[in-house]
Structure formats: C-alpha cells, structure tokens
Length: 109
Length: 173
Image 1: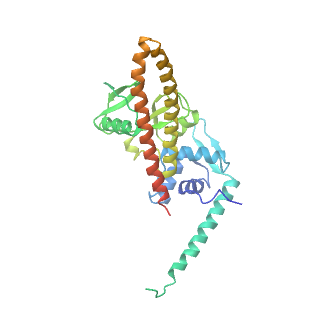
Image 2: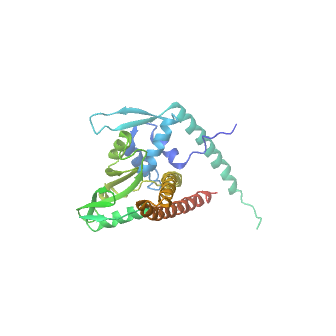
Image 3: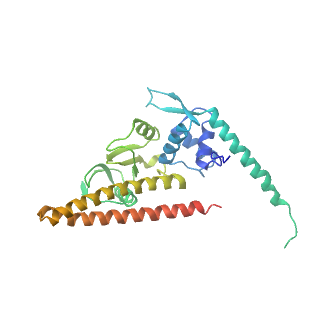
C-alpha cells in the first residue's frame, strides 16, 4: 500500500506540532518562528490554506471559538493527526539513525 | 488621491502598492482600475494581493483568520483580495513555501484561463456580428483582440512563475 500521508511538508509538520496544545493562527506562527529560530516563517496565506486542508483531512479540529474577544478560533491536533505525526517521527528518526552511517570513516580516497 | 492603473500581474500590482505606501500613500479602495489613496506615514503598511474563492467577498473564516493575524482586508474585487498589515508587525508575506506558492499561482492561472475562454466566446460572437456589418461589433472585436492578447500574455507569465517554483521544488533531492 502506498502511504500518502508521509513525508509531511515542513509546514504541515510544524503546524501539527504547534497544535499539540490548543492554539490560534497567530500563536502557531509565533511558536513555529520561535522553535526554528525564525527559519520557518508561515505566511498568512500558507497557514490559512494548510489549516483548511488539515481540518478537511481531520488531522486537526476546532477546539474553541471565543465569540467575545475578536472571535479567535483555537485549533487542536486530533488522534488521527497525532498518528500521522508519529508515523513521520518514526520515518525521521530512521533517517537520523541511518544518517549516522556516514560517520563510518574509511580511507577510500 | 486617485490613480488609474490596469494591472494583470498581481506581483507588479503588489510592488506598486508597496512603493506607494513607502512614499506615504496608503491604498484604501479600488474601483474598476481606479486606486484610492490616503496619506500615511511613509512605510506604515505592507500590501499583499490574494486570490479568493468568492466574488467581491470573503468567507467569515478567511476574514477572522486574517484579522487574528493582524491583517486588514482593504478591498475585494472580483476574486481578488487586497490586504495590508502594519509594517510594525514585521514582514508581511502570504505564501512562504514552495508548495503553497505553486497552489496559489496555479489557482491564478486557472482563473485567467476561464476568463480567456469566455473572452474567446465573446470574440466569436462579435466576429459574426462584425461580419454581419454591425458597427459596434467591429469596435468591440478590435478591443477584444487586445484583451485576449493581454490574458494570453499573463497566462504564459504565470506558467513561467509556476515552472520556476517547480524547479525549486524538484531541486530538493
């Protein structure tokens, strides 16, 4: 079976990670920038599109809508989203583990 | 201040709006090629142009999301949405990765192709009219040739933009 879920794009990876706890759009942008030392910045259009897609895939869900304070919408990762994230984490750790093989120094030159 | 401009290329339009804002003119409205400007502190805003899914409006979802991230919807026109954010809030970009940029320009190209198809239909209607000797049809026919040419041009340009993005994506191996 061809698994289409992984690899995740960097954007999806970090959005799912930022939604391990309830978070709103601006919070996601800030957290991802902080975690990556400003390497990964999420443009408003990029994040909006990704949230729409992830919600449709049911990897994330609306957690809370605050109707009073500017109607901020908070999102949260779903169990399905966690499963996909875990799958990606396994793939990445395999990469890291196998990547270490490059340290086997041999005199081939 | 009001300025008249016809932009087919949203990147050039964005560039111009930001140049105007840098000079102290903040765009506040648009109607059929006429851009309205108000005085502002030079460089107060950063403008961006997006393509939405609705005519002359945006979904509540989109509006709320943009407001949450400090983005103001200045004007909707057709499917186009003109947005701005205070430059004090930092860099303002809409599409920051290759995948979403490709999706954005592909959507733009699709819209232009649909409009072009409609124009070509109009072209043939006017052509029959012109051949039947209707005067205004002949004038319209002439006008349509220019419009069709402009759209073909922007479709080709958008395709080039997409191809460059695909190349960047394909380069990651």
